[in-house]
Image (cartoon, rainbow, N blue to C red; front, top):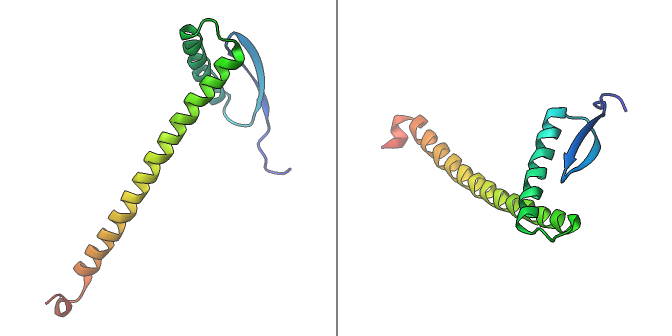
Amino acid sequence: MEGAPERQPVRVTILSRPYTLLASGDPREIEAVAASVDQLMLSIAAKAPNADSTRIAVMACLHLADKLRTLERDLSRLQDRVDRKSVEFAGMLDRALAPAEERR
């Protein structure tokens, strides 16, 4: 496929297990995301020392899904607010640019 970025291996460690990922993005970004996931999973493991890695991974996924849902909700509210303000400002601009006779 022409123009597709070349994928390169990136080595990361999550929950003391090494993984090699093929990534087309910046390896440092992949490493940073993996470090964040590792930190979250280690935090969960510390609170639930008897949990196996699958349970820890599921809990981490639920945590991240909840965080994503909250951010999506916040983004939607922000988009609605921007839309309302855009309509408001467009109306103000129309009134300001209207000929003087129309404003009377």
